[in-house]
Length: 263
Ligand code: SF4
Image (cartoon, rainbow, N blue to C red; front, side, top):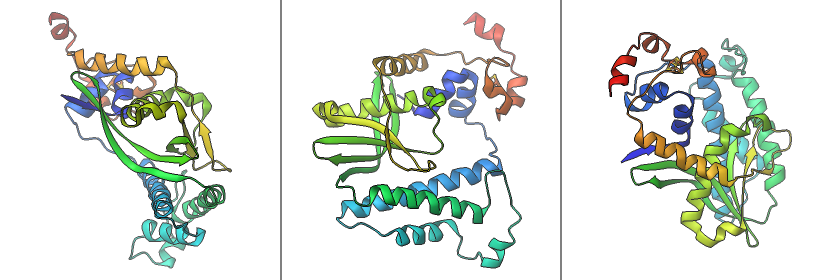
């Protein structure tokens, strides 16, 4: 049984050799400092949003101050001093510790203002799911948050800097969430809205994301393709990803066309 994720499907769509290096061969890859900082920033903010919803689930709305306290606890290592923060040399285009704290405080404030008084009940927070897509392929992902308000369900993905022009990059994620919600909650799907909360928008609120039958069919198609693919070949120079691909070196030496043609 093959276990895939929305990200691995997207890598396969980009280039099958990229998929092979990353998920079959598991070649080591280095992650740049800027990417690491941005991942840590986003994961820390997500942790705080999960904390907020866990508390809401328990019938208590945490204060904005407690969200900020949580940020400081998670973001700043125990041994970092205020002098270190003020003199921090690691400036990057994404930000440094101090500027990212300002950015986080503003995101959390906007989130808090829009969600503290809402009368909803969180029924899923950071909840994993695994779902069969074909007899031999399962997809694994998670629901960031599912809220219930009245008789409506809001199935939410937490995002950062979402752009409408990049909508196609998230169709796999939402198609997967749609399938998983249908399996888990059955008829409730007719009362569910799927969408995202972009934590970096000036107004942090729920925005719907349209999921079409084409998106659902396309996910099934790519799962079938992954199940059947035996030859993982490069698309060198034909995909935008080549410019930043961590596997450029092994890929440049790849020379199995004749071997693959014989199969
Ligand atoms: S460099 Fe390009 S062709 Fe080679 S594995 Fe990476 S994405 Fe694929």
